[in-house]
Length: 465
Ligand code: UD1
Ligand code: MG
Image (tube, rainbow, N blue to C red; front, side, top):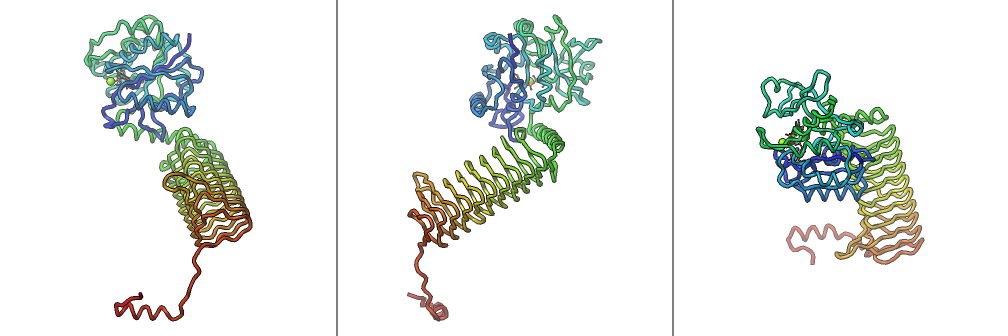
């Protein structure tokens, strides 16, 4: 017998007005459903995601997260078919929960992203528990009714409630932990005899509460807030952001302009990191001690070592930046960029599948793609690796302590030996041996006195032949 989680995610999410299923809308870069799944304990017997609307997209996302190692436990999906209510959602899971030999079932909603892992753990450990919140304006939430000793006595949807019941401010957060045999029996007895003609899971929970005591835990409303509209999404993101900023500040991170900085839930920061205004860190990002990330920079799925300086307005994705390196301003490090220690990447430099060894520099206006640059090598302004012939990509291998003069095109495949010197303005199409000087440009001619002669002809409109 094991504890199995059921995540409800079949709803249409009409109010989001989107082609994207509601549960895939992101909060700080991670979809709501991923937040929910990541809060599950690792020792669960499994989790079942109930899908229907946008099923293909949700299943594709689950597959991608599984491949990326982001899921804490085995996850399967059940297609609810046309959703007929939360109780119907659980009814369609009966065969799957039986197959998983569920002893205890924990129900969560895929559109409630900010429930903390500790709260979910508490839910998993309970025998029979419902999470509730106290709201000044309880709105359309279901109302929680309790016995004098606190045990659950009833759950009433707002649309079915009497005026007295509507006045109750304790509302149902939609998260429960219940013994599967009792819940299973209750699900089989559900009817849709209510204002919405839905099969209510809440009716099943109340039926269980008639058999065994169901406790009510009142939580911080932020942990149970759902995402039903873009407004909710913005509010949830702001709450998540405050939570994450508070956490990292306590760990020694400076936010120069808290509130303008977006730091995702899978970002790992270190002591004395400084985040300037408008920085966005998304996905799996690791930032080492004392690293400063400049204003307006975006970093996704990347590792920045300690003592790195990212100057303003850089975009860094799927890259690694070694200790003490300097990047930007206005640099773009694309997938497969791997910078060793003390590398300098300056303004308007783009790198892709580029490995730069220690101390290499490309300080201005360059494109380095499918390339390896040796230790201490200097890449001049305007250097381009011509890595693509229209069909295939080719590599450029540049040795140590090479000097590549400005405005040089390196036509790959190409190899440049250690200590070589490439004259500015060259188009290099053949391998350059170590220590060689390579030049490929037409010899300059200067015709004295010719400039004024040319201008005189231009005025007459005859031009030069
Ligand atoms: C439900 C509760 C209500 C509680 C509220 C908390 C019921 C009857 N009511 O409200 O007491 O205050 O949650 O948020 O359970 N879903 C399905 N299949 C369905 C219907 C819904 O998967 O057939 C999913 C939705 O996608 C959503 C979640 O269940 O993720 C909650 O559904 P929603 O319609 O938002 O909640 P209510 O039923 O209105
Ligand atoms: Mg509903």
